[in-house]
Length: 84
Image (cartoon, rainbow, N blue to C red; front, side):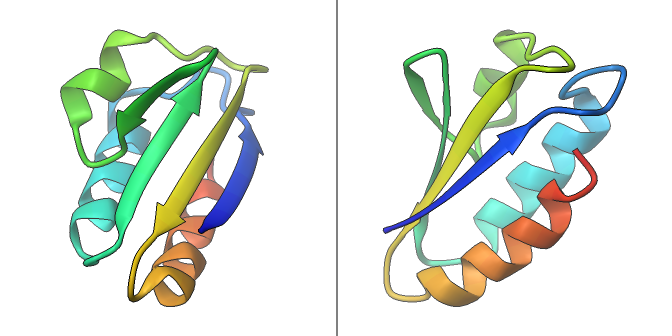
């Protein structure tokens, strides 16, 4: 399992456009990708679950990638999360 911690720096927080990028990338891989926020763990590929938490700027999240292609998937997800 690979953990990717991230502090949201976008002034709008984890808004729809960023959430769509994360969900789309998570769906591309066979590995399971989850997002943890304030103790709540949700599938990163589930756009509605990610959006309903209203993650704001300055808050911390952790994305976890676990599975057969986790290294490649985590690298791709890190690139996207650099824009968060």
